[in-house]
Length: 290
Image (cartoon, rainbow, N blue to C red; front, side):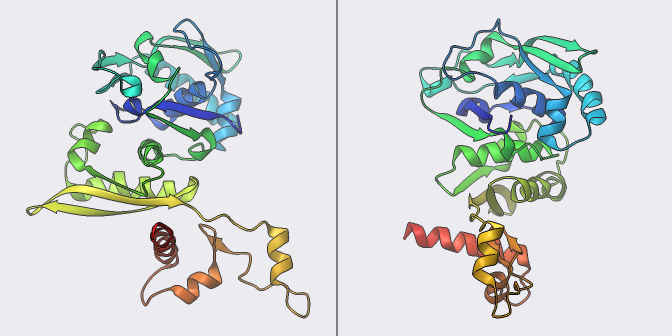
């Protein structure tokens, strides 16, 4: 599953639903197995094992086995509210549907097989436009379901480098209902952990700011881009050797692909390593646009 790709209609990326991180892993692992060279039907079963989940997420097989069973039982009840049609053609015909129509749990084999709901098929297959693609590995190590959703929303606008959304819309998309109604709680328990995991585990760097309408915080703006590519260790060692053949102490350390020595030289007073790295990436992106 190392090179597995996820394809989703943008309408599904922006749909309103709530899945736990374990349910996300099962659904996304199965989506990654949808063949691009053949039509998806609502009759095909997609199987994912606890071992596959453990391998992709870096968790213990016992933990994966236990969570796989619990997630498979809940998935059957999970609903999704869609607000647009796949490929953007015509009016939406589906408002409220389910992810799957069948779940089969193989206790002896430690695996689950699922059959996608009939209404979900067009949002996962035969996508010609208005879809989002990313690697399963991009989100595999995340432990926050909100981080997975945020990454998808950023990946959808990957070339733009910025996305502004209303808090009301984001709360609806994440199906938070009455949870984290206080803006401080919303930022502390939803946004900050999600952004942290996007920065830590995905190929994107991200930072965010808030915007007010009157005296109320109404929108969040996410600025993001591709992380700088790191230099392979052997090449880096060859370039940084001193006269005595020793490697500089800081040369092997980098944050978001930026060498620590560069971060230290560019840091502003009171600015931390991560803040400096994100600022430099943002500045580099703005310069490339100009």
